[in-house]
Amino acid sequence: MINNMSLEFGTGDIGVSSGIKPFTGVGFIGFTNQEPKEIGFIEYLDKTVFTEDFPLIMHFTKTKSIDVVISALEEVKRLMTDYEADQWKV
Image 1: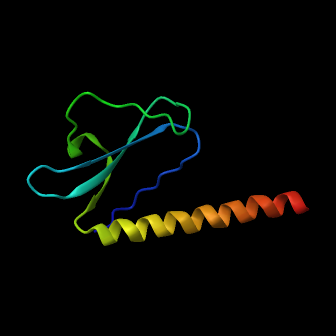
Image 2: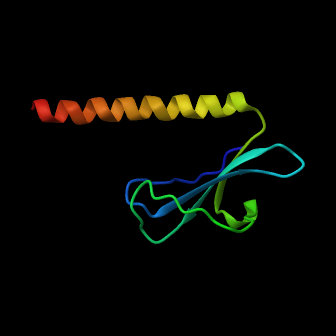
């Protein structure tokens, strides 16, 4: 199922959390708004989080689905890197 929502990364104001739902083995990545932080900053929470805490969440029932998302992210990264390199040639 897909809901119409958009995330814009690049300013450090989106928190990204990951985990696995107990007793189900379903993995998840949750996204939440946060005060801007350095991109890549890792903050380990010493508390239980619930999927209901995230306004946007990705659930994974098969690891192959994670591979597909990783491949898409790697392709976008490659395209952006090529674009940035081309900008310097002008």
